[in-house]
Image (tube, rainbow, N blue to C red; front, side, top):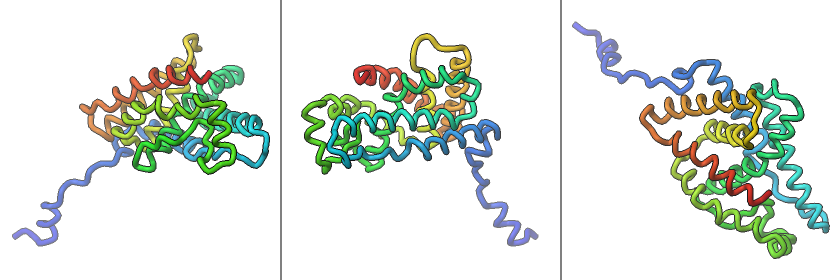
Amino acid sequence: MIETDSFFQFLEPPVVSSVEDKLDSEVFQQILKIENAYISQLKELPICSNETNDVWMACTSQLNEYSNRVRDFIDRIPNFNSIHFIEKTSLTHLSTHSVILMCLCIHSLRLRTINTNWNYFNISSNSSINQYVQERFPFFFELNRLTYSFQKELQILELDDKEISLMLTLLITSIGNDKLKEIENIEEEFFSILYDYMAVKRGIDNKDYFILKIQIPLLHRITTLIS
């Protein structure tokens, strides 16, 4: 006769393995470090300060803050430790607009809708400098419209923080045409990590990785307009 406890234990469905269990432990630790770098530096971008009457200074300070946060994000990822300071500086300079633009799009989507009122300087609509800056630099207020299709794809994909942080890393490594071999190697590694993570999380036959991958050059193309 089968004991009651054993019988019900037999009927219980098998425990579904977590993403962590299915990934190589070293790879998962890499992902966690990048995710933590994203959370600490880029997940919550500061609002442009209007404490000064110097509007130009306020906008310049905001752009400098963006650059510093992208640089700190890069510095917190061990894979970039082998890259010389000059190359890191160049990566930061070239990729900041793409990284920040994606972060602003993600922030908009956290509201569960596509917010068409955000602007690249992250100036609050209630700020005293909002109208002044918008009249003189309208392009920075039109980026929400230019990235609409990109935001729609992000909305459908519903990326978690790990996927977002890996995507940001790839935005950094994929910038420019004349890349060092070290940077190319890092890029290949993170494409592989993103694929493995999304395959484990979403299923091996899921196409989301490929949909996300083709957004990279599209976003770079938009940000060339900022430069």
